[in-house]
Image (tube, rainbow, N blue to C red; front, side):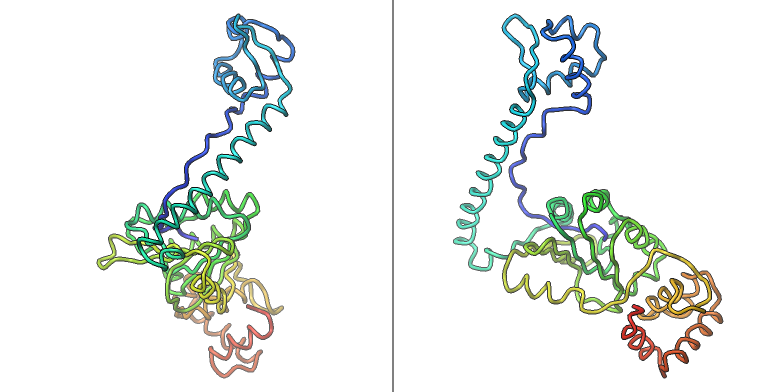
Length: 325
């Protein structure tokens, strides 16, 4: 799914866990040598040990007495205390958000309770990333392509991170996007990373839904050089956007297999049907599959004959009924 504008006010940022990747090594060394003067310990340690030691001291896993001597403490209690503090800060932030939201709604009207307009592409993009980073179960999207000329056409690292932690990605792409070779490559990269993708000839808008409680709609400005966004919170509007999603479309596969469709349905046949359903011309399909226009026409005719379809539209319907799409 491609990145685009979006922006809601950021919640207060919690401090990171005060431990570097080298902390375990330093903690292990201290277990063997403590109690030991800090100056003596660092004199023979690796250069990065000072930073790791600072994190251990901040977390409470290591204690330095008034004489500068380091003592090792059981880490579980120290880190659980750190975690409890952050949980309390998070609860306080949520309570503050509720209070401020009530004030905001009182000034801007009832709609402000479930809709927030974000001005400008930079703020919009930041919220686009925040919503994905904060999602717990899934991200869904309707993708009409990048509205802004400087928008990257590749899956962003935030999506790869989310997929690696088990988040489910589902996206419906507008068929016209597949005419763009760079976008097609980007879509394949997303599918290859685990995204479930579908294609539909024309989409009414560009949006993203995270879990079941957040929606983001991109609002391009005239001229195409900037865009705003609308963040939607739990409401009938969000329910409507969820209903709009995933009603139509045929799967896009990461494979580029072009084998003859002798044993229906092969990956190549499914790919051909997906492109066909998206409304692409024979020329565009041939370019995507790396075959000739004549071969595309022959395969389509054979599939129509096989499924008893009199038109390409009927072919798509019959293929869907058979579970080929």
